[in-house]
Length: 187
Image (cartoon, rainbow, N blue to C red; front, side, top):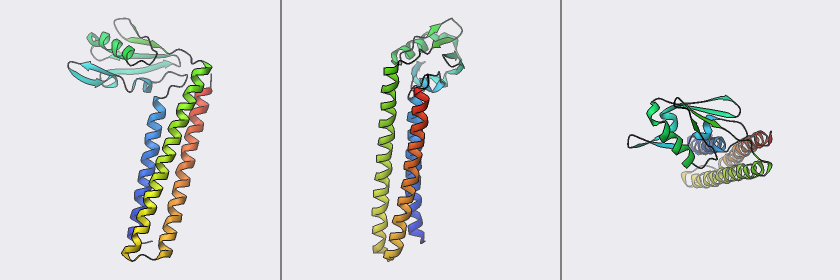
């Protein structure tokens, strides 16, 4: 395999890997039935005039499957954190006891679980589309190598390698999606 061919394959692999990382990050944001610090990952607070992610101003723990504890580094901002969590529209109602915020994570209804599964499937499908777009771009780059004097056999071999890579990453998306779906439907 020529250096140019390897470069095209490496670029495609890196792009597809980034798509998987993005999918995993999006899956973390989709609520299952269990409490997780990741549920609050997008919550930002006004911390002395600077919009700050909640996890940078507090320790976030889950002592059990139905509760999240937010322990602020500065107890005076607990009310600000409480308002930010409620404003994030996550369906949580934090309880401020002066020391920590306690968030009871309500169990998901069957209908809500189904909606979340649809959301996860949509995320997975858009990731697959992204991977296929990377494949198309890599195939275009491979065909452009013909102008650099690369043989048609080499280009055909490269396209086959790109397809194998695409199949591998599409399979990975399906596996991640199945695990997330099973996790969400667990009561």
